[in-house]
Each structure stands twice: as structure tokens, then as C-alpha cells.
Length: 321
Image (tube, rainbow, N blue to C red; front, side, top):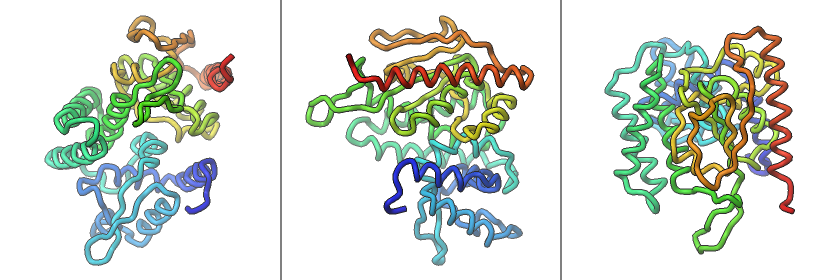
């Protein structure tokens, strides 16, 4: 990993996760109750421990898992932020072939407690543990209200709550700057929020295209006013054809702190349902909903959104004046 630049790392990770078995395995790692699974614990009594260990090590080499000391000398693995941000949605959407049985509900309680503890440590200087616990519980409830499969809720909650807390403590101003620890203005990554009704089509397309084009230069979020539980299959198929489907995320509800943290909010067909926060820049793109449409129409919609996204990126990166 030493000496690999950002773009090289992203390419390495995308290449690593092109294997669907690794996506399925990552979903299991993300939902493991212990938070530190080993190859043996993931394989169970009848699984192929050697194959699983090889996949885990490949993901660790790509910076998606962090190896930790485990019991009996066997390494354990914990997902890195890159694993959650770049591949969490794709992994959790992938059909699971490893440990498909439902999780004991008590596991969710333990996992949420661990998530709360870890996020409290991350925000120890800015937020109280009670505030973190409230956001974790609220995030879980918002996702659970629309979830078809509850197995992945803790992993989704970890990402959703982390994004909300990050937005809460680091709002940007209208110039795209934020105050540093010394009180001086410091450059801040551009924040763009894409919002549609279900967060399953148009906003996901726009986010995937912008992430692919901008890399780390722009921080991209998505949300839905009435989110679905998964991406539209036709949209996912078209994005996969273009090689950007792994840059999507699971649909999530629109929340106030995420709007406030975004320099620009782009609405795609959600009308007046998106609250307006003074000082933020807004764009409205009147684009057809691709859900349930034939493949050729979805292709046309993705082409339209792609053209708009590249124009938006040019605008965002244009020097002031």
C-alpha cells in the first residue's frame, strides 16, 4: 500500500471487488456481530476456510479490511472506511451465500452498542456520548422502517449514522470553507447532495457519475424523501454496464443535518419535498424517473444525468471570478 496514490488505490480496490464472491463476503464482514471476524468464524464448520482467508487477505491488501490480532494466532479483520464508503452498498445488495440464516435480534443490540462506542470515540472532542447514541438509534429506526431484510441493518446504520454525525459537526459555509481548529478559514472539500424521491435511481446515478469523475475532490451524498429499500434493478444493470455500479450506496432518508452540511443540493424530481436551507446553492434537474422503464430509456436517462453531472463538476471546480 505504501506509495500508492489516491487514484491508484481506488483502481486497486475496484479491481479487487470485481469478484462477486468478495462482495458477498464483505457483506458478511459488515454484519458480523463481533466486529472482528476471522476466516474460521466466517467459514463455519463446513465452509472453505482457506478460500475465505485468501479473499480476506486480498481485501486487506487493497486497504478495504484492517487485519487485527485474533484468537489462537488467527488474524481477525475489520472493515475500513473505504470498504463502507465505496463498496458497502454494493456488498449489502449482493445475494449472500455465506451464513444466509437470520441474525439473532440480540446481535443487533450488541452491534449497535459497539457502533455507538466507536462513533463516540471518533467524536469525543465535539459530541457527547448521549448525542451519538441518539443519532445511532434514530438512524437505525429510520432504516428499519423500510428495510425488507433486517440482517444488514447494523452495517447500514453505522454508515448512515457516521455520515449524519460528520455532517453535524462539519457544516460548510456558502464559500465551501469551514473553520479550522485555530479559527482560520481552511479549504474544505466541495459537498454535493443529490436528492430524489426514492434514492434508488436518479440521485444514485448522479452520485455514481460524480464520484467516478471527481474522485476525492468532491464529497458526494445522496438521499430520498421516501427512500426505497434497494436500488432499481434496471438502474443498477445500466450502471454496471458502465463500470460505476460499485460507486452507489444503499438508499437512505433525507435528514436536516445533511442538507445543512452540503454546499450544493441537486434535486431530481422531488419537487417541494426537499427543505430549503438559506445560504445553500440549489439546482433542480427535471429528469424522468427510470424505475421500471425499458433498458433503452434508462440508458437515455443515464446519458442525460451524466452530461449534467460533468457540467456541474466544471462549474464547481471553476476558479472564483
